[in-house]
Length: 212
Image (cartoon, rainbow, N blue to C red; front, side, top):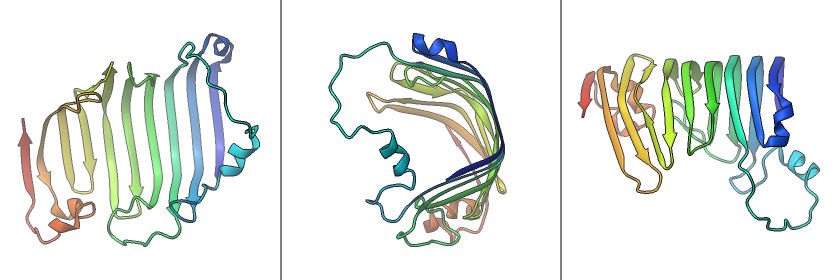
């Protein structure tokens, strides 16, 4: 289910009584995580943990209290291997399959002072990994913010395989469903896109785009 050669967490746990947890640093090295279920309707392999902490009694409705605040000042993940498997689902070699996800060589450096969806603040310094379908994320970095129902990013850069995409401005409103996108790419390899959309596999020439 989960293994790590090194786990180091520094946090101010005394603030939990004030509905707040400020995690100064999280450092994971050489870790393996596997989430699995036999069918889309069967329980996950961690169900026994949920059962162990469940009383079995129906929960009483309580009036909403103070929202819990959670933040991470420094997150460092090195050489991670993460799997998500639905055993009964068919395999699709060479095409991304959300039922069979295998990420290896995961490396992440980020900070998230607030993960509250209504006031999110996340700075992604670097993210890289290899996915078994044939995608190599060489670097993903940028920032994500939110206020109320609006989520936005002013700069997000993704480099994968032979392609690169820069999102200069992206917005999405959770309530109104309105979206805005300003993005560009000087080079997209159709083979990279075909991993997610096999319909374009017959395109043999690179292309670029500028969405404003």
